[in-house]
Image (tube, rainbow, N blue to C red):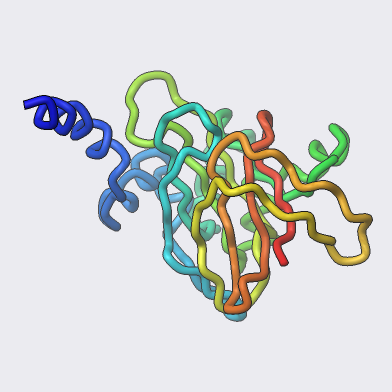
Length: 208
């Protein structure tokens, strides 16, 4: 009897975090952004799979969604024609930055819809919807560019500590302490990048 009670108590939790279907994710992006983004996990020299994952990326105990998209320039242009100051206040669009970024660097890396539509129409964006599927006050949304290497890439999540690794010619910095699940973008050799929440923004760290 005790085992039965425990099982019943756990069932609602698992129901919340189960992976949504393609149609659920597509509808969520459409409902929230009205055609500004289209689900897309492939471009000329980059193929990332799966197209989306769920996890607790910011460590608050709630389910978050990470989905790969591309911008729809024609919809952005339509919105800007109707309102030149068009924006979505809850959404931060930025180039992915590394650990130790300054406030000025973070500010300079932010992009407007117009800039994305003009300069990054061929790029994949990592769209992160925190508190996915919850109603009420809108949670912060993030769209990252330049978050992954090119080639055939697998997107997974992990909360295992990251290992110290160099980032090109930059000085080696200690790996961050994860606050939630990290998003890993790895090639066949297990190398690539990790995208993680630092408490204020999503940053990246190399994986070797």
